[in-house]
Length: 45
Image (cartoon, rainbow, N blue to C red):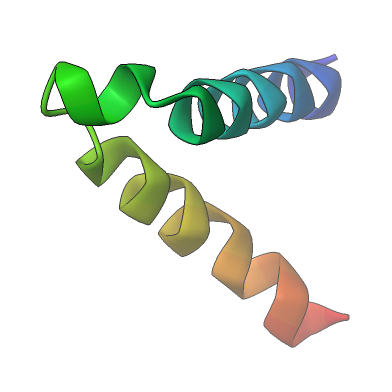
């Protein structure tokens, strides 16, 4: 369940990033946090 929730949050952050919403609100750091959160799974695979 948490894995699915993580995917929903990740997709939401990416959509907000590409629409420019995060840049207008100075929240681009969320993209970095998402990348750091995904990085260990990429190394594991």
